Length: 376
Image 1 (tube, rainbow, N blue to C red):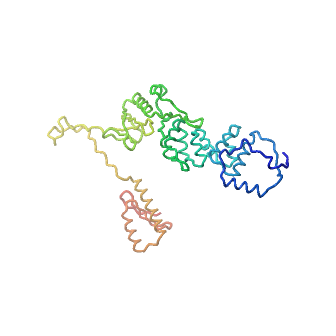
Image 2: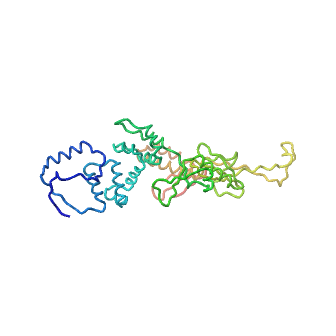
Image 3: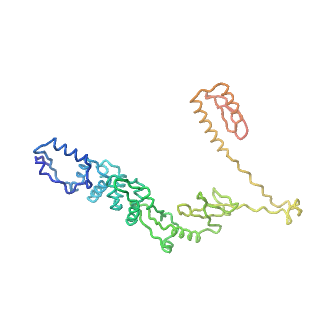
């Protein structure tokens, strides 16, 4: 590395310059004004040995200092650095860019060139729209760009363009069927872009074939007491009439309902059918004109109705009301007569605890319909 003086008119453009798109008139005018003001016959030039990246990083940094690069030029420079052995992490450190931003820019490698030319003007889609665009084939992008191409000096309608290219994906990791059914239904898996090595991101857009294979797999694999059911508008399984869903551990006598959720996954729930009441006698009970049944005949009690709100729920509601009361008392003072009225109402509550805030205070509590006095 050494310092030398050169005639600025002898300098030549860098053939490998990072900036491919034309700079703005303001930036050109600033550079020209700087040259005129300085007006030196000779300038000092620091000559250094060429790095193993052929000056790619220096070219990119100097371009950024002169004027910020548009995303397309940034992407092209990043791809050049990657080809020369730079890692995404090293590029991020050198340019003070998050690795996520670098990976987002690298998505542009899968964009139609005509779209890239428009993006170079500074009109970029958001990340989700960009991911939808790059997931489509180039011929599909070409058709969508033809239908939604903006007029001169107008912004692109990225929303509708990405919607035109959006397709429902069914993922291999959600498939219960194997390769045999996949081949029988003509399903071809596509590898997801930039997928981690330890994650299966294969997918297909042939939704009908995927669901058909899932349905056939369920038909061949549901248990003895199983049934295949549909889902309602909320994505919940439609169980048989009078069936009761089992949320705990199912017993051997319970049934299993299998269904496909909104993502095409095979799901299953346990359910229980109500037992039929045995008749007290062959001809019915005496009230219906038949013979009275034996005293040994089993009598099934009606199920106890479930309360609208459980005891735990009542306690939670009480806590919420307490917090709200504390907040209200903190915002504004309360008159003595109003406080007494609230105290009287509290004593008749189902889930009320009244404390003075002092230690060893006397408190009234009412739990489960019984009022108790206690010290807290």
